[in-house]
Each structure stands twice: as C-alpha cells, then as structure tokens.
Length: 307
Image 1: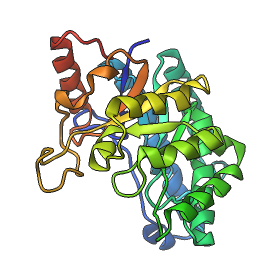
Image 2: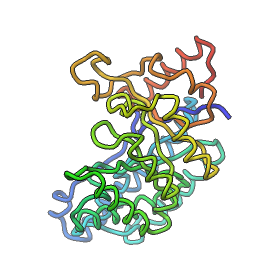
Image 3: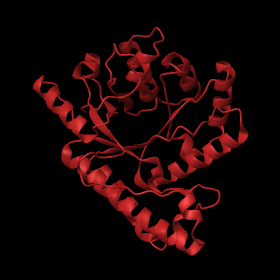
Image 4: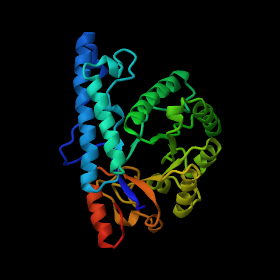
C-alpha cells in the first residue's frame, strides 16, 4: 500500500460547489418552504459530494474529508429535519449510497472532522448534549457513505486538564456505537499534545490522528518519528490504516505565529520517515487540490512514490 494524500472538504479550481444556509434564513420561512429549500440544498450537496469523490479519483487524490454541514442545520433545535422529510430524500439517499460505492471501488478513504463547537470535554452538559447530537448526525452520514473516521479535538482545558480528560473519557465511553466505532482524537496546537492524548486513546482503544504541524507548535518531548510510531500503533492495534495531518506555516517556522496554514506545503515539512509508511495524510492547505497536485509533482521529482 502507498501513502495516500487527502483533500479537505473543498476544491479551489475544480467545478465542485457545495451550498449552505443559516437558521436565520430558514426561520423566516414557513415549514413547507423550509423543507423545500433544504431538500434542494441537500440534493445539490449530495450530487456534488459524488462529483467531489470522482474528481479526487481523477486527480490521483486518495482520501477526501467531507464537510460537516453537508446537510446544513440538520440538528438545529428549531429548523432541523430528517432526510425522510425532504421531497428529494430518496434521491439524496441513493446519491450517498452511490458515493460510498464509488469510494470503495476506487479505494478513496472518506472522513469527517466536526467543527470546533463539538466539544465532549466541556463542563457544560448542554454543550456535550449538542455535541453528541452533531456527532450522531455525522455518524449517520458516515454510515451512508462508508466513512471510517470522525476526527475530534479534545477541547478546552477549563483550568484543569486532568478533570477535562476524565470528562472526555466518560462521555466517549457512553457514545452510541456508530459514533464510538469511528471516533478518533487529534492533538492540537494549544492544549493537548500527543503525550496528553496517547494514554486516553490507549485506555479507550481509540486511534490518534497525528497532526505534525500541531506537534511542532506544541512540542511535548517526543520526536516526530516517535510520535508517528506511537500514534500509528493506536491504529494498527485495531487493524486500521494510520491517519495523519500535514500543513505548513503561512509565515514560516521562524515567523511570529506558526499556527496559521499556508496555501501550499513545503516538501521539507514532510518527515522522511513517512515515505515508507502505509498511511493517509490529509493535506491542510489553503490552495486545496492545487497544493496536493504541486506536492505530488515535487515529491515525484525527488523519486518518492505518493498517491
């Protein structure tokens, strides 16, 4: 197996376009009009999701992260909806199934990465409840298209990292199986390092998504090679392919703030130890597919084999 590069949610130049709406806009409409508008948007997005996966395959991109609001406001308490309430619901379900079938046939790995408001370690019960509802929605989509990863940050520290991690463990243990079986944790660049999350992942048999950019911003004493290997073991114990994230700093590593992502990837930011590993690497770059295509070309020039 070769290392595969993944695209995150959107295209820069390719004619793949997703639509959205807001709860404010929907609330101005009567319920029948709401559902008609939502049906139109969801059908468009389901059609473009299939097109996105087909486009990724055509470009030689091996993984695709599906945008969280593919079906916008589906879990909203006032304007939320079910697929079977939409006039195009059956067609939308068929499009999702076609996307999953195409991805499996062409070995395109699909994933989700919930927005930052999804926080399982929060001390506020209402935040946790809303987060679980959002994760259930994403698990519904993941089952429909065959995505195996719903990746999550650990959240805030709330003045006591140990207590926050204990809350995180308890909530994860009680998650519905469609969520729990796909959930992964990712180290971040502010609060939770690889070393912080490895014991949680090992205790809960969760995979750890290793974000090398975050690790470089929030070092923890582990080398890149050690962190890659230890994170990889959390996947391999479950018989699954490792998942990592890669990005370059917009202002360079010597800039004032290395956290913001650049448009493209600097090839030297890829660890040499990664080239021989079977893994998925999401490319978090502002130039989207253009960044991946440039990186593939630069790596090919150096005789490394990545697809």
